[in-house]
Length: 229
Image (cartoon, rainbow, N blue to C red):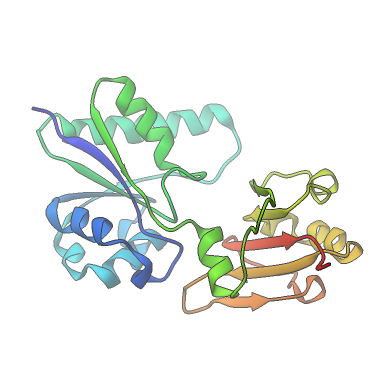
């Protein structure tokens, strides 16, 4: 029998927001895969090990995942990661793949998952708290009410068009375009909230577009809501 690839969401940053099931999956399995060159230096590992100290004694499988835009090069990295995972699965061992937030939301895990599944191996997904849900809770606001729409927009976004979407807009990982995003938001009458490094020690919160810093880090999430009526 081959092992199972299990994608486990560790939440956005606060180890107390890991689910009981995520903790159990890590405790019950020996091989833990983490996207990065050095497993113990990754954000996902540093979050999980606080909730599951036993993780320090597990067999770690580091899967290099450089943040590049070249689709061909990305595919090579995903193929290589899937190959490494499958080598472990062939031994009958499960592989728990740690990922930030929820595995189904813009997660690197799903690229590996699709390849491994296509090759006939069993797969599972353990949901985690998505970053935008955690960010809204941290700022003590709702994401949607009544019949409001919710738009989750990735880093490569067209802010000029998307700023006009109705309801609530979540701009994920906007750091690279933060200057342009900030300028557009300042020109709108929308309610603007931003959390940087949600749930982590270096967390920062901003409740006005004017206060958004130009040096915002990669883990910055902006929530834009229609003006209060």
